[in-house]
Image 1 (cartoon, protein in one colour):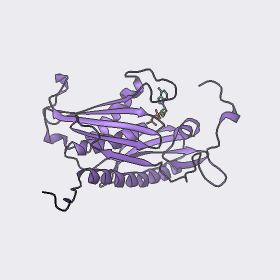
Image 2 (tube, rainbow, N blue to C red):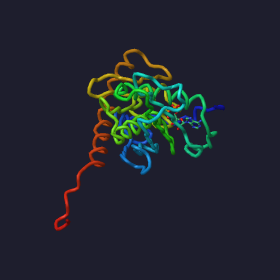
Image 3 (cartoon, rainbow, N blue to C red):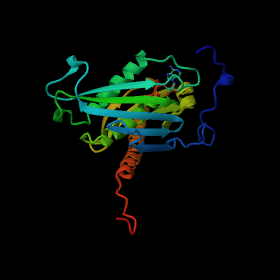
Image 4 (cartoon, rainbow, N blue to C red):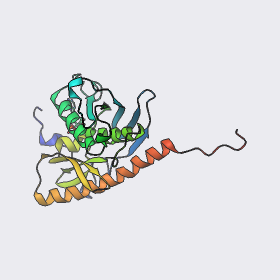
Length: 250
Ligand code: ADP
């Protein structure tokens, strides 16, 4: 990281309790979700969330490749999370690195807990997540996009899967970290919630916080997930809304 002098660290929380982009501690970045953004995938979704831009495309259930991954009792969910070379300010080396592999794996596992995989034995459900622009929270944006894309593909699920990161920045717990808060803050805690059961199916943490803060951070994240859930449902409603027939049209 090089030497970052104290003068280079931005003020993450103003004396009035506002964040670097003017948000309150429990405020999400603006989020826009478009279901069915791609023509050729079975299901897709485009998520713009703060400065993140993430596309998800879903294919399947279809034949499993490579064949040895096939399971006799359920579908396998194969997820590929990728950050485009142009998605960050300094060109990212293209291709699969350890971070992308880990994120792909944890997202696949989280999605497996909401998809009725037993209904489609010996098949694969392939989920592609392409991060076109990154500004912290891309795994959460990827999960949101992927689960709307799965719904758009008509794949039966227990529920959608909203996700958000809570963190600690400038000494306070904050919802939905942006890049500076992620880089210079004290903690980053991404999570994904199954809203109907109230269960978390993904939880990771970098940095440090006390158990009491962790408990408060979880409450904050769950509330954030519930807000995002409403946006996800609205995006699907918008996609499948039946336009009232125009007067006089056949
Ligand atoms: P997430 O995007 O889920 O928050 P991280 O915490 O690993 O995942 O990354 C935080 C942010 O750091 C990313 O959203 C991105 O803006 C930036 N970042 C991650 N990997 C790279 C990379 N290889 N090069 C440049 N920036 C990166």
